[in-house]
Image (cartoon, rainbow, N blue to C red; front, side):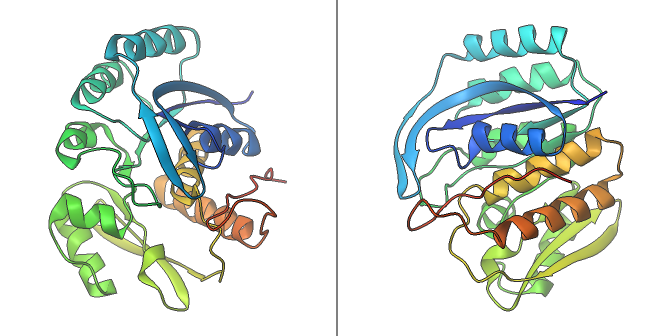
Length: 252
């Protein structure tokens, strides 16, 4: 039986990030994906041109009807554009007891601002793990993060389980830091020298959610997700410039 994984996130019209990347990732991991859309974006790999946010009561209706018929084994949360959306999601999470992966999507790769940190903090107590990149972590904790020592300090002081993604740090390695239950673990991989990284954050957090739904613990879920994402980065697609998307091939 294939586990159900729910994504609560925004739609990316180019298909490379957001709901579309999440559902592709779920299918690649042989999970059944359901989705509740928080925002519609008009975007491509060059940037976000427009954002439309449906009323919060419509998001609540999506969650209500989806969860009652398709109870999830894990939840991935992405873009939440306003405080009303956060409140609706918080209420829904109170009804669930499954793992939750929260990707605090605040700024798109293109630089477009998508959410406010203060709104997202309400959801932190529900999260099995939170997956910020370095820019997002700086916004959340107020620290300048310029080294692995900075990453460790920020993660250890954060107060919640966190996978701090170091992909924007440069260097020969892509080093992520998992800090949970007082334990720090580095997840390292050789940096893949390409610019086609549109949707990598969404894809990684969704893969973690899938692995949790499949019964792996948090550390193994993060390891498996990073390994799969690294493999995808080696398979450069032929479309999208200057920041092309991934091709979400299935797990063997």
